[in-house]
Amino acid sequence: MSDSFPRLETDRLILRAAKLSDAEALYHVYADADVTRYLDLEAIASIEQARRIILHRSDRFRSGQAVRWGIALKSSYRLIGSCGFSLRPGFRAEIGYELAPAYWRQGIMSEALTAIIGYGWRSTHINRFEAFTMLENTASAQLLLKLGFQEEGILRDYGFWKGTFHDLRSFALLRGDRSAK
Image (cartoon, rainbow, N blue to C red):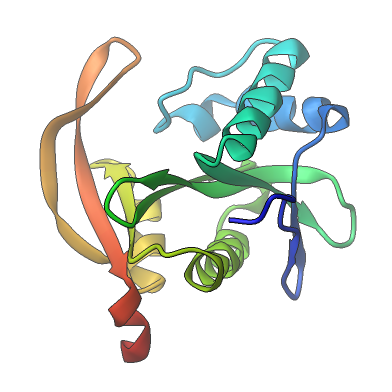
């Protein structure tokens, strides 16, 4: 990955680094229990918690562990969610994403993930993008399938957050799968 944070643009979106000045916008995303329902994160209760999330993601980028873009509509530049990937051993990366409910089912996350996956193919040696969803998160599973990910099965008690174990559906998109699209 690059030393400077990669800014990406799509038809409707700007994918950029979140800044501390974005903390209030991200607070409104992460304070919503519908957004965090399937995440390993409780709904946050303060703008300070949003600031800590921004700083943590910045540290992970600087250390070469992950890149997490803030998602903004070109029309407003205000963050409405985020998406990104964490690098894993063996030329793998795990993607993650969330979006404010007012923007669900408008193709925004599909547009954003297409851009970051393309960046990953061009700028890294990633061979496999992985994603894991809770069984109940059918919208996320449908999104991944739409993007060309293949479901690989259910990992029993694979995740542990919010005080309980979770079965997760495993999805993957391989570098070689791109030629099939």
